[in-house]
Image 1 (tube, rainbow, N blue to C red):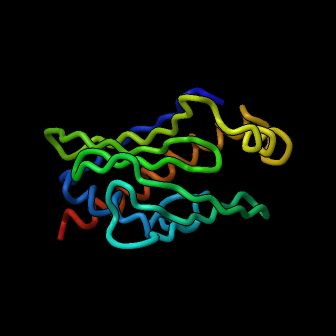
Image 2 (image 1 turned 30 degrees about the vertical axis):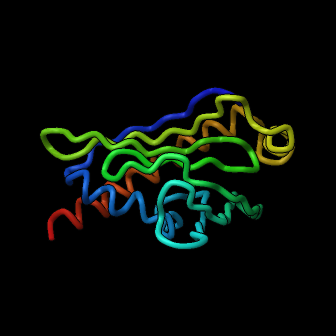
Image 3 (image 1 turned 90 degrees about the vertical axis):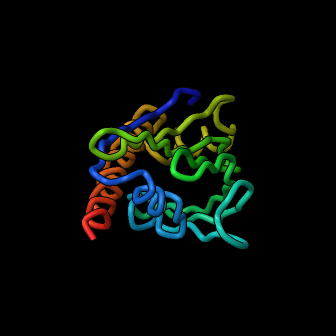
Length: 154
């Protein structure tokens, strides 16, 4: 599972407005169909911030932890999930009409052995799980878009 998964959306709101939503990790559960909760440990979100996450797929629920590895306000936020070695990122690019957001899931060194086994045996297999992750990323971005555009009109 070393391939990059990616989803992109155009949002009619400024990068600052979109950033206010993307960087509020405590709200991730409102956007993501799989990550139901992110609890920020410590102070405000920044590079090095750690989170405790609760994920769900159907009846399966599992915790993960992550650490923010990139934090460039209004541009990019990325966090590394400790248990499976994946890096999730949100990159914001200003456009003439607002912001383009790219969400990625990368596994530059592959995922952990335990994670790969769990995905293969419990979560439906790597290909199926990757498809679900991309669908979830698109859903997440649609929800972020709706909230950003609502805030942008205020």
